[in-house]
Length: 174
Image 1 (tube, rainbow, N blue to C red):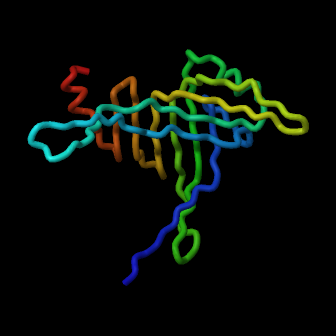
Image 2: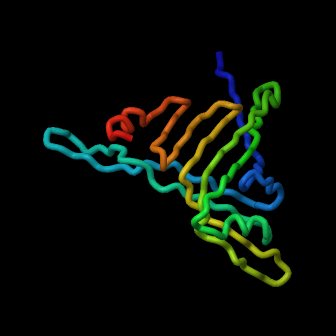
Image 3: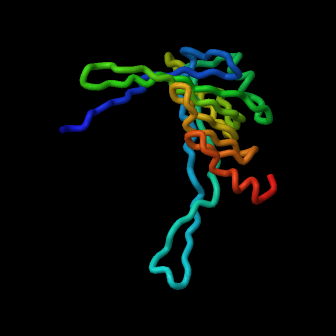
């Protein structure tokens, strides 16, 4: 018996800054990559080298705006102020019967913008604006279930609700 194939597709998204809906104002958002810092380990008696996790790399993302928006630039201009950024999308789930389900995918972030666009202007073309941000908190929720949560300032890392750093926090007294 052949396995059942399910295909998931995300074809659009919307973003919110401090709860304000920015529908139609961004052309693209690049969410941060969660990347481990790996350190090489070698020792006498081992037949090879291995890499072991030593922490997380910085979280960076980018938003490309389709024009200049005063209310957006007021939020992104201050590099010392955190902003609640949310990316919402819908996952269309297909099987042999067609579209079987639609699931909400929501990514919550606390960010500080570190690069703000003044624009690239060309005759008869819409200017391009691109804001780059650093992220200290990220949580991804699918259909109401938290898949992952990472908080750099609270030493929290949860995967499927399981606290991966509980022993670490206890060991360091934090």
